Image 1 (cartoon, rainbow, N blue to C red):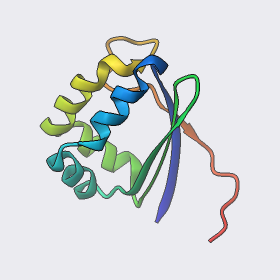
Image 2: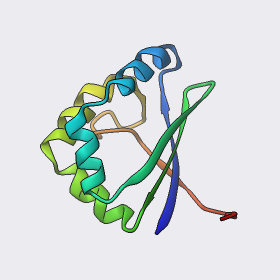
Image 3: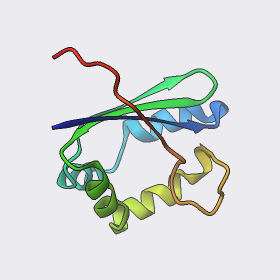
Amino acid sequence: MGRVAYVFKIKPELKNEYKRIHDDIWPELKKAIRDCGQRNYSLFFRKGGTIFAYLETDDFEGGNEKLNNMDISIRWEKMMDKYFVKDDDTALGPEMEILEEVWHLD
């Protein structure tokens, strides 16, 4: 099992709306995320608009590739696009920076 952490930015003024949408995340999207091998998935907000994400998976790249090609994920990312701060406006979804794990206590 691998642990993955990454950060991306949202527009800070849209934080409450972003959180509300995630409070009611589509059940079929949750199922798709799980079906792609991602679990124990959490998002945390830091002032300034940075989102810290953590999840566990056996194959992050493969799972993300599968998820990113699913219609449910494409529709979700298109709906969420207005929240993301990014340099490439043509990219679907947030611009993620994968973080290097330094230490872990089990």
